[in-house]
Image (cartoon, rainbow, N blue to C red; front, side):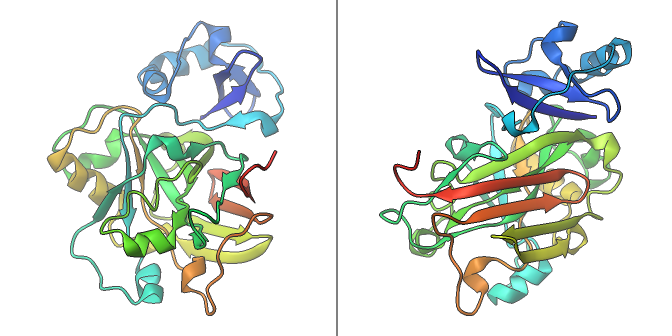
Length: 284
């Protein structure tokens, strides 16, 4: 099933889709979920309600909001695709490169991304497979790790490359407001038999930029969950951004950075596509 958030007159509400009956608002079947962790913890209730519910409603998918709300953690991984490591001429890491993606960066699947030239002149895109954790997880083995996954979604790990090279860590350069478009929905793990067999792509202004496969991850989803859970407890609703493949703007010759007026599209096979306009300060 797919779970999304749609804008309403009051705020935004979660809804579920089984691929046949349209979107069913969770409130219409008596389920209250104000954020992603509380929604994830009601997975069994949602599944039962979906079986018992009547036809869904038709909604305007342009009103989709970010399906990730108030996670306790957003963890990102750098240099996790063999092809991306080669294009950047970086040394292949021996263990996952981990940094934080702050929640202020989250915006919806079609929301504007702010590119302020007074902050950065080297804005870049990174299509990524994002993993949503489904249960409290600590010290899990690789063999058991995928059982901790609630679902998957599409993210764009927008980056300020100038600050990424100036700062001794990645957090600030990846954490500006609007620097994490995500969505368009969460696809539950039962519909993704193998997260390491998905095409992953991005476009800028309709021009193909990234075209790869999650098969080329250096560290698989299972390896990442096992690695991270050794030192921290992963909670329901936590998000892991699993890295980006080759084709990013800064590695092009000459580099191609994002400018107001651009549009970036990111897609992971079977999980949908997000499309975000790049805007400057004061854009209305």
